[in-house]
Image (cartoon, rainbow, N blue to C red; front, side, top):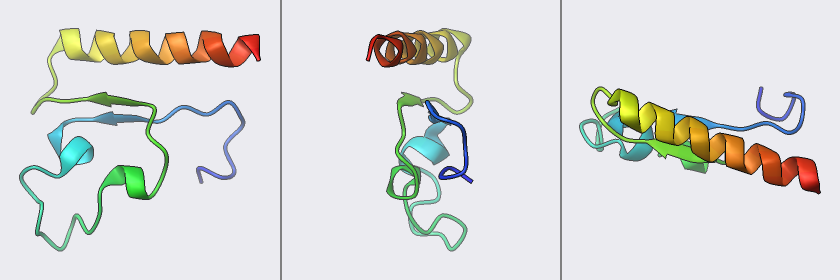
Length: 71
């Protein structure tokens, strides 16, 4: 799906499980980190993520979008 998405495409990893597989590191349901499957543009840690962390992740994506528009 990532390859078929319209570009520019941004990926955000939300939560500790998506960011680093903290709790499910050696589990069958989390075979590899998300960034090994698709390139991740922003990480929002937390379980669950705090609103401040979500806002910081969105701000980071907006900054990347502005840089992509300038190219």
